[in-house]
Length: 169
Image 1 (tube, rainbow, N blue to C red):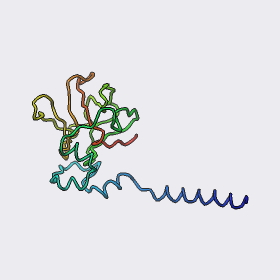
Image 2: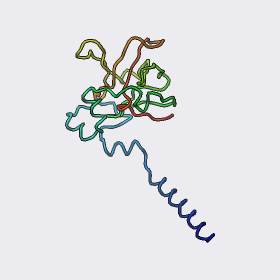
Image 3: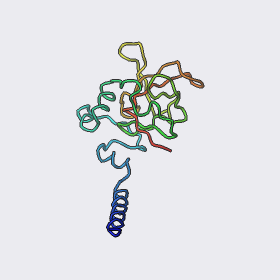
Image 4: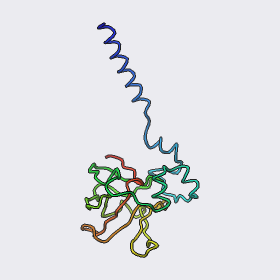
């Protein structure tokens, strides 16, 4: 009986080890599904929405391509306090770092500054009331920017978690 128990434990350990070695890099896995996803390529991505619909999840597509908004306090990153970097979930473009993330009390991840000049582009919403924020590389709708944020910029980039990828530092 003891031999069977020991063999069971050894088998379980071997199985866990082989599974952990079989798991690959999450970036490479994402690139298998989405050939436009890269953390280093800065060339603009311009493909039709029909193609995006085949690549993105339904939630990503609704927000990124149809400018939908996730419900407050439901996204993966609104309460994320880990150190790391936020990328566009559609194309992998660098968007924000955790150093500029703050608790806005809105239920969406909020940042006071983008990661670089190549991160974001802004345009007036069709209603003329807000400023929409898009990924500069693939034009994915990310959220909106408001002028009620903290110093030093006074800006609040209010983003949808579903169109962000977070890589822990």
